[in-house]
Every structure is written in structure tokens, then in C-alpha cells.
Length: 180
Image 1 (spheres, helix red, strand yellow):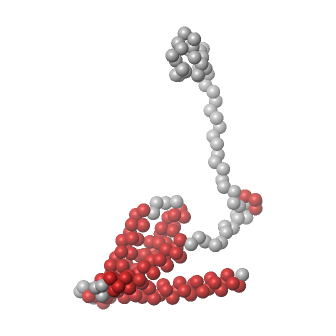
Image 2: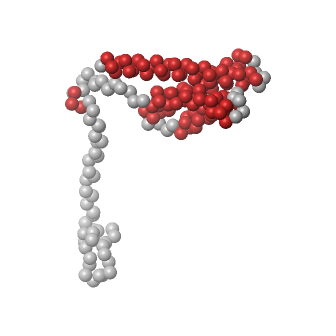
Image 3: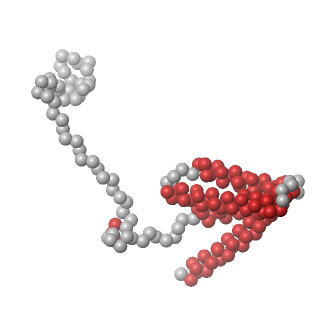
């Protein structure tokens, strides 16, 4: 128990450190690119906040939609668009070389990877039972309610009686069954 808590605490510290540093770098790159292209300083920060926090929000939205069984396609596309926008801002601020682009992309990719890992982890708590529910039924899946079979319909007495389905009439050997 102590080992699990210590490991969990270390994971949270690492998550906060990487998230803080990657987020700061990504925010700064978006801000600097916005300002370099003629926008006021406050709009640079507004753009940085909008671009970077959208990734977190959209990740949370995807998780909630999956939990509710709703489609995630459009939200996933928007998440990819904002991730690419952040990545493009970082690469645009980099030295124009392959290594410059790779190094500049690291904060954005690390930040997105952290969002993905954190949001895709399963909750560790088990659901608590309702007070009036017996303990044995906590994890039983609900059984579908089967409708009652329909009552047989009797044909009127004036209708001719046909032989049962699949019975071949001797005077028509080419017929395999009777179509009703």
C-alpha cells in the first residue's frame, strides 16, 4: 500500500513537471509567433491559452463521449487540428533545420502525449452499490426483457388447409416446399 502511494505520488510529480514545462514552452511558442505576425501581446497570450487548453478540453470531451457511448469523430478531428496548430507554431519558431524542428516539436508532442495518457487511463475505483440493491447484483449485467410470444392466429374456417411447410406433394415432385 505504501509502495503504491509513493509510486502514485512520483507519477503525479513527473506529470506536473513535464506538463508545466511542456505547456510553458508550447504557450510561449504560440504567443511569440502570434506577436511576430503583428498581433498585440495580450492577443498572443489569448491565442496561446486557446490553442493549448483546447487540447486538454477536447481530450476530456472525448473521454466523456466514450463513457456515454456517443460518437467522438468530430471532436477527434478538432483535437488533431489544434494539436497540429500548436505543433506548427513550435516548428515555425525553430531554427530552420531538421534537428531544430524536431527539438521544437518535443514540448507539444510531450504535452499531447501526457494528455492522452492521463485521459485514457481507467479509473481505479469500483462503483459503489445502491443502498437498496443486494450485494450479489452489483456487477451483474442487466438482462433484456423478452416480449411474450404472440398468440397463434387461427385462420377462418373457410380457408383451405395447407400441408405443413417442407412437405412435398406427391403430384408435384419438383416443389421442395410450400410457400405461404
